[in-house]
Image 1: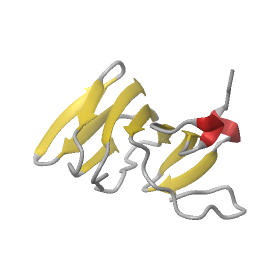
Image 2 (image 1 turned 45 degrees about the vertical axis):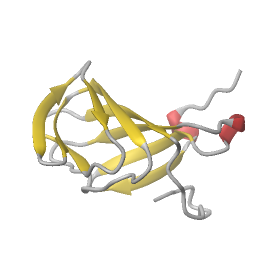
Image 3 (image 1 turned 60 degrees about the vertical axis):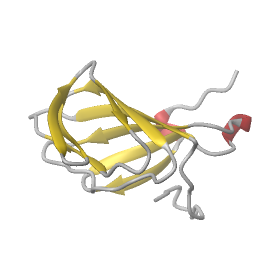
Image 4 (image 1 turned 120 degrees about the vertical axis):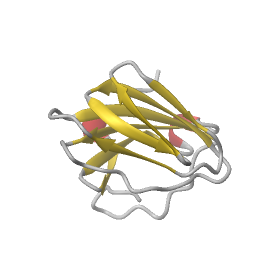
Length: 122
């Protein structure tokens, strides 16, 4: 059994959101999946980005957000799943008064740059 808590994971700070890399390429022998736990304060916004060769799923755990995928935009809340096709531009913004928390799963895994000693990734 392999276990990693978000407090032990590599972190990335983007747009007021903190992404914790729970499972990265090669971690625990994983080959086909990346998992992140993300927390964002009110008004935080992830920048628009793509994963050219990977599909991605976001699952909202807590809070409310506005998810943009391509030209589409939708309000999302706890219990919502969003599927992002390979190559689709996407971003999420916290539009609520409470923290926005979500999990993302990406397959195949997105590439990570070299990790520095500050335990951060991009």
